[in-house]
Amino acid sequence: MATIGMIGAGSWGIALSVLLCNNGHQVTVWSALPEEIAELKEKREHRTLPGVLMPEGMEFTTELEEAMREKDLLVTAVPSVFVRQTAAKMKPFLRPGQIVVNVAKGIEESTLKTLSGVLEEELPAADVAVLSGPSHAEEVSRGLPTTCVAGARTRRTAEYVQSLFMSEVFRVYTSPDVLGIELGAALKNVIALAAGIADGLGYGDNTKAALITRGIAEIARLGMAMGGKFETFCGLSGIGDLIVTCASMHSRNRRAGILIGKGYTMEEAMKEVQMVVEGVYSAKAALALAKKYYMSMPIIEQVNAVLFDGKPASEAVRDLMLRDPRDEDSGLSW
Image (cartoon, rainbow, N blue to C red):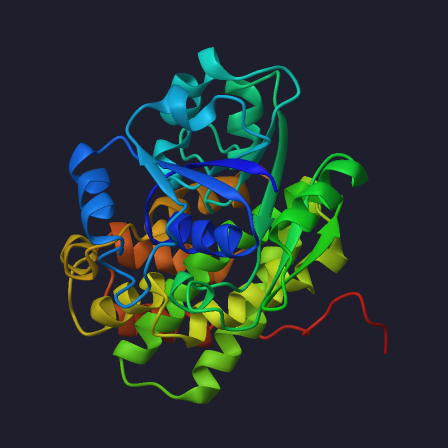
């Protein structure tokens, strides 16, 4: 049995806490919100995961030191926009070499750093790893078969994370490509917004297949320019996560996109979804990275124009379709 501190009590943090408890580990869940912890203690159920009861051994606290003290593993599951400030609060209680697994998905807009990069900057004494893949909290919390990938700087750390999360319903692979895993996880949220917008406009399966296929091409181009590996973007945190996020109504990014396609503003859509829509926060960072690395990312560009410049969604789709003709893959020779 391992002792684990779950830093974040959103639906994903709770789903993973249920999984880890069912694997026989002791989990302490932290939230900065006293009302959230009080509700979890009283109801033993998360409001976004109705019917999923917390195991009796799961503990809850608003004291960060309590959640971190003498833990074998720490998991950061706060929204991407709160990762840096949460990590700064964690620093006084972190022991050297502590393994910290980031499960949030996003890119910090102000620095263009991945979230593991943010954690390594704020917690230089930590051994930072990541866990990602096609994994909706609603399904993981109910024990539906799911696969993910654990990324770390060393095989030893990746295999340790794998051993804690692996179960008969949660299969975990390992990878050394931490950067590629995180880029795939973050950028797919922006493509999922585009897929949702297409749904909201009333377009069909052909449109969604085009967005998924050309979307992973954009993600892989940028990711490899930044140092990620092509194989990663063909895997669970690349095409796998992209497919599930573009296709499922569990996806808050797709749901927000649907509303935008129906005429909602970005702000109205986020309010209606009532959860953090990570793709909105990652869209500007993705566009900035594309410019930094001189990458053509037309879907990302059009999503930004719709979200932040007031461009009609139907006009954005038309502009994507009417781009200059080109080869599907310029690397293939005739």
